[in-house]
Length: 424
Image (cartoon, rainbow, N blue to C red; front, top):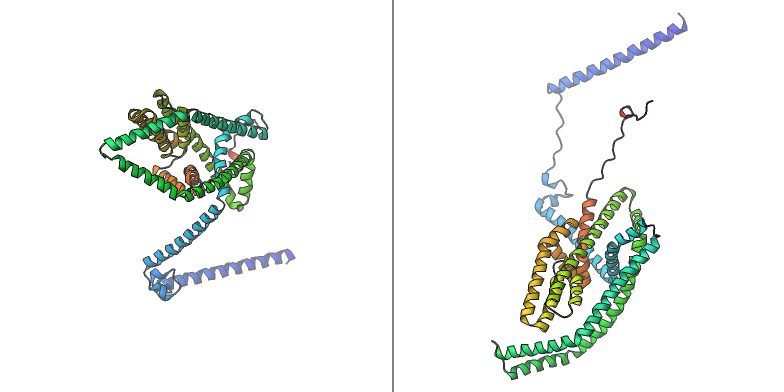
């Protein structure tokens, strides 16, 4: 027998031996399953916990506590921790409010001026030059408007003072001859009480003036920081955002970047819609003031425009100032007419402009808007009311985008189904 035949025979024997072992193993497995089916070998009993409600407990004492109470306690201590962290965060933000508030205002201004910078960039302007031109132009417009308003107030102040004196005289006559029927002695006592209150609180008023001087310094510092931050937000906003995204883990960068860019678009849309609504409010009330020859028509219209940046309540309060000026200058009839014009403008804003313009830009229910404005006034006054609603809108967009799942990448097209545009 040759060596090749011997090797072939050994391979065949090894193959047969392997087949026999496999057959034996299968037979043993079949017998075991049959015995299990006949009940000869009982199945092991599953280990059951003593109490199904105690699956998350570590001791028998916790298992004796009702499950609802355990869940309530777990929620309670977690909410307490979140509340303490939130309180500490608010304290830290309050300590650096002189930096945080100007940055928030700068973001609003950057969102307002960003489209103009984009237009200049598309016109082949260098980025730094485009930012400087837009910022200087916006600053010139604000300074020019304020100068015109102050000049009109200075020119019309003597006439308004005489009208106010006449109005106070009319109020005194109404208190004396009206339903209250007050005597001259009672009126004098009330006037003397008011003067004595002013004399007694002169120290508080003086300290308030001193604190106001400190506030002026803070406002000047904040204004410089707003201009500085707005310039760099407009010029280097993209690079700043890419740096911030790079601080996050790699797996979370795409989600943070998507949420941030969507939030920025929401902020830009909110500012555009607010400017449009404020302009329409100012035009409506300003036309009414001009038609009835109320003094300071342009300054009051500018005040309405600025007040409209505080949703729901801003334009109403600034409109109330216009009504008071109309009352002092033209009497009750003119004041009632201006009051009706303010009400009509507010109804048009609330029922037409806000749902149509603002609803497309920012999908927010009126309830969180009112709550945000109230909380902003309590925390930071006028500035808090100004930034509260855009902050809520940005957070709403960011949370929605962060909770969204990452879209799956498109599957590659098999090479066999690719249609060639040219013959092979």
